[in-house]
Length: 209
Image (tube, rainbow, N blue to C red; front, side):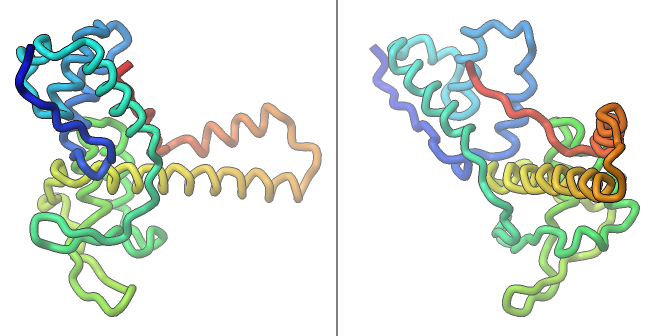
C-alpha cells in the first residue's frame, strides 16, 4: 500500500494554465481511459505516473471525480491579478484594441497550445492606476509575457467572458435585423450566425472521464 498522499486541487485557482495545456495534449478521441486517468493524476496532483498504480483504485476514482467537478466551475472575469511579483490587467477597453492585438488574439486562442500566449495579449503589466482605473503597457508581439504559470481560473474567466461577449453581439445583430424585417429566414439566421462564429474564442473544456 502506498504511503504517499495526494494533494488534490478542488479549485481552478490551485492549478495553472500550463498544467491544463499539458492535459489538453492527451485529450484525443481514441485516448485510453486508464492512461488518461493516470496522466490526470500526474499532471494535476504532481505524482509521477509510475506511482499512480500503487494507490487504491477507489481513491483514484474519487480524485478523478473531484477534478472533474472542479472543471464545472465557470469563474468570472478577473480584471487584475498578481503574477510573477507584478500586477497584470485585462485590456481595459476591447473596443480600443489595435489590429495587431485582434489578429494575434484571434489566432492564438484557436489552440490550447498557444493559449498562454493569448493570455499574454489579453493581460499585460499595469503601467498606471488610479482606484479602479488603470492602463497597461503597449502591445509588442515580440515581448508577449509567458503566462503559462497563471492561475487557471483567471484564464478560464477571460475565455468565458469573451465567448459570452461574442454570443451577445451575435444575438444583438440578429435581434436588430428582426426588428427591421420579420421576413428573415432561418437559413439567413444560420448564415449570420456562421459569420459571427468567425473569430470565436470558445474552445471546449476537457474532463478526465
